[in-house]
Length: 33
Image 1 (cartoon, rainbow, N blue to C red):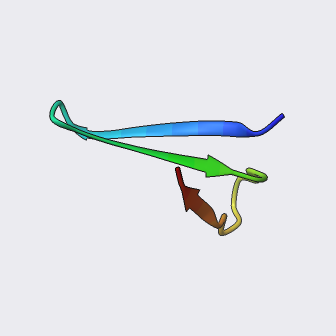
Image 2 (spheres, helix red, strand yellow):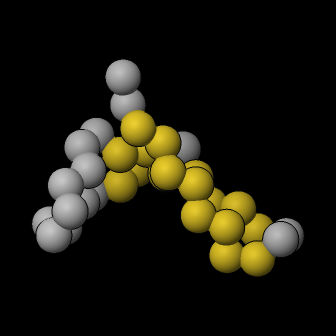
Image 3 (cartoon, one colour):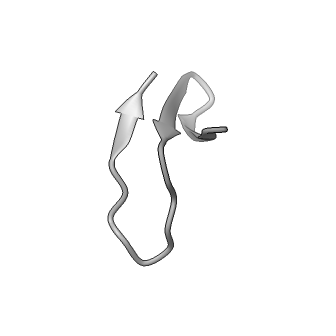
């Protein structure tokens, strides 16, 4: 199952990306949904 990370920059703008794998300390490529 894929992890989904939602970043809210301000109340009017939401950005949702889908991550294949999340590892702390490494660069993670994200794909916009």
